[in-house]
Image 1: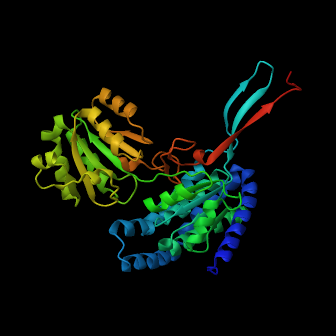
Image 2: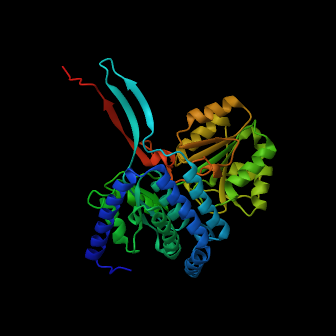
Image 3: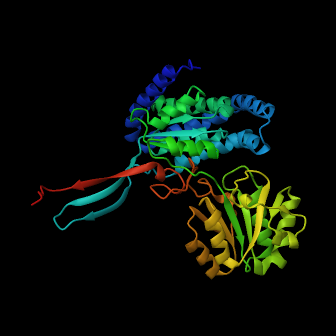
Length: 425
């Protein structure tokens, strides 16, 4: 661990940035075979390192529990053999994806004979700042590599041991494929000054930042970063149950959307039920949520129909619980749902459960969120589930990347113009 003086942190981060830029130049011209061999070698190294990773993770989990962290936080932090194997399989899935670098997005010819192509290129150097999820180390490293980018990883102190063990396996994979080990670097200090140096852009060596963590972290990055940011501030996700929804489907999907994993950003935080379906759909859905251990906070109108619910304050409908809690309200059909969601949503993910196609189209057209689902759980808001092999995060902005940030979103493009001696009059 480096000396935690301001000057030493600044010097170390500057060196990391320079080495990342040099590695990025090599990765920009790496072949698909080289990158895919590295990814497969990383996957093999992860599986071989399961005992070491679990030992390191055990230290992080024990410290988190001793510190009184919430159950949801500990769940995000905890690794087991199945989760590590899933990480390695994610790397193999990324290796199977087409190489985005060099892909011709569009091509056309001008009347003067100039042939113009828009071609995908790497972003360069990506900085990823994250907190308790150690799996981000593998996901981010692999996705950036596939897209031809170098990456600088700054994990939180809570997952430092776990992230370090995972990073060691990734470096082993790079080494096996003959790619620069500096292609995936991890910041060797938990000093917050390191984050500050990344937000400054490392003297022009950092091209984009992706924060993965709580609201305070993301807000700081968005406020202070001098380079572009791909991020979402919160995941206040909604499920709307229309009057036309199949009841058994509504019960199963809502329960999954909330309770499969309550601590992820795609977990549903608010349930909206069409008033026309209140007497048929509300109680069965809430009964299932309650049976699974979910605390229900509801409006007085809902509580009149379901007295076991607690009271929802107005603030509840703008809260990302990341826990087994859901806020519930009745709305006047799809238009009422749209109005509520547009007033309270973080523009992350929303779902409609309905048979009525007109209601679905109104929902899809009327809501400005990155991900919209019909008759499916909000927990599918994940790059791996989208067939992207994984994701580096979810972006809710409208520039460049939106929704799951996978390999394609980790590229830029340039224009390649081919002529035969043309000059401009």
